[in-house]
Each structure stands twice: as structure tokens, then as C-alpha cells.
Length: 231
Image 1 (cartoon, helix red, strand yellow):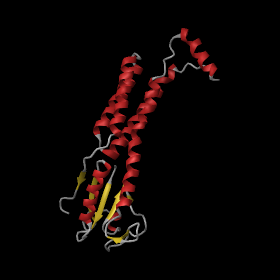
Image 2 (spheres, rainbow, N blue to C red):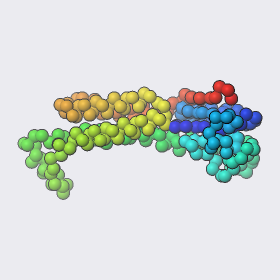
Image 3 (tube, rainbow, N blue to C red):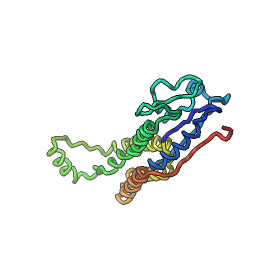
Image 4 (cartoon, helix red, strand yellow):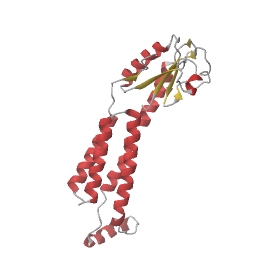
């Protein structure tokens, strides 16, 4: 998850209940929560936090309960699905927001797939093989084109795209192991493809990149809370 922010004021009686709910939810979802806390009474609190009631919970910058009740300096009152009034965000709303964020961050690692597929393209450097390629493409209704000169730029472009996707994934999850593994796999693929087109090196890089995606899909039960020490 990129960011979960608890906004509260010093005298808020419900902030601790929100913290306890987040700990419980982190265990239920099996995800690592990157929680920050903003005391709206702090002189350095951002303007958007000052305009929100306490407590308010934001996931990726969005209010988990976007019903228009989050403004002002009074204690915030929420309505549960069954109509009851409560001083903390409904658990169902928080779960829904966290699950949506979780689904988004998991697909960040898919960005390395284009570079893996490109690595599997044969280098059309053998004239004796051209008739074979031409016949295969003709059966598909396509025209044979020697794409070898373009493999280098395409690989570099896809590698940059993949690195950006992995950076996006890391920024949302702070999971360094799958991120670093994915970057290593991509680097090996590119090096193997652009140097000697070593099949073993290319497939090794592809395996490592696939491993990175598998690691990224694995849930983490750790919870990380960056709490304000003075709050």
C-alpha cells in the first residue's frame, strides 16, 4: 500500500480505536500497512489535514468514507451500514479501500512482461532461416520483416518501462526483495540479449523476473507504522 494516513487532533478520543482497528485489519488481510499519523493541531500540519474532522483515514490520499462528512474541526461521526452512529470509520469501508489499494499495487510488477517477451524473440541474423520465418508469418497472413536492427532499442525501451513499473510497485509496497529481484532479472535479460544473445543467460533472467512477480504476489503479515513520536 502506498500510504495510509490517520488524521486526528490531540484531544480526539477515537484515534486509538482507529489504530487498533488497523492492526486487526492488517492481520486479516495479511498485508504490510505503511501507516502515517498527522496531528492536525501541529503547527506543521498540511492544510488539507487541517480541513478534515478527527479522526479521518486516508488511503492513497482518498477518504475511506467519501460522504462529505469529513470537513470541520468537530469530532467526526460515521454511519455504519446498519445505520448506527460511530466515532471511527466503519470497518467495512476501511477493508474495501485497503483491498482496492492492494489490488492496484500487485500489478505493478507486470511491467516486466514486455521485456521478457521481447527477449524470447529470435534474432533474425541467419539468412538461411529467413525462408522458415517467412513461411510461418505467411501462414498467419503477415509479411516477413527483418526486425533484428530494432531489437536493441525495443529492449531498452521495454527495460525502462519495466524499471518504472517496479519503481511504482516499490513506492506503493516498500517490498524491496521482489523489486530488487525484478530489476536484477531485467538487467540479466537485457545484457544477455544485447551482447551474445546467450540463451542460458536470457532464460535465467526470465526465471528471476518471474520469481520477482511471485514474491510480489505473496502477502506480508508485517505491519509498519510511522507514528509521530510527539503525538
